[in-house]
Image 1 (cartoon, rainbow, N blue to C red):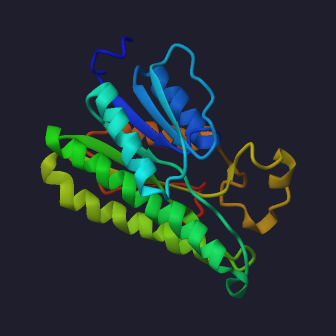
Image 2 (cartoon, one colour):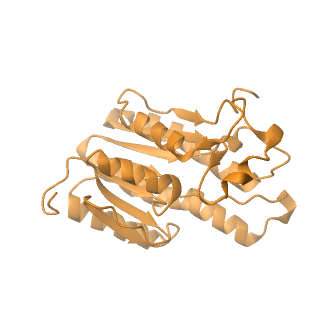
Image 3 (cartoon, rainbow, N blue to C red):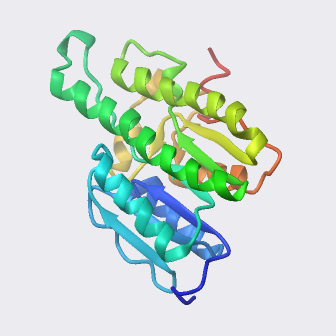
Length: 241
């Protein structure tokens, strides 16, 4: 695909260096998308894909602005934004520090705000686009054995923003949805660590896989009549409460 020709579809994916973001990028590339990938760490190359990769901090408004501008200059449009980047810090509420608060609110909310604002502004000029936010089931189902108020507060904010933006921008052809994962097995933690969850496991009795979350993202991307949806990928965790 020539970089001088506008892509048929352009997707921006945050937190794309590993895990859910990396797998999402791989499958979007397989589907023929041109990609802009953002992460605090360098994103590994994707063979046979037209990719712009940006390494930087999403909480830095200038980094986000320059990344969006470079994406638009190179590809001429933005069709999809997947807000996958996120921070999870589990501590008793009174143990959180100012640094914890700044990190969680910065990445989960400010980073989302800066990039989504710019992406939607571009989408609105062409009448159409899709935003998928990655929230978390723990924002709806609390667990005293794993306190996570900062994650619940910030990811709950993303869920509320998803519904609000879906209504605000529906008339401009822009859809906004979210995927809400439960306990997902990722490469960040050894597989055996998920075998001792006991009563914390959802009704299906096992942890989910990265592929389960990515499949949900792709489902929403391919469903033009769905907007404002919070799609739970949690093995029945939400339904069981």
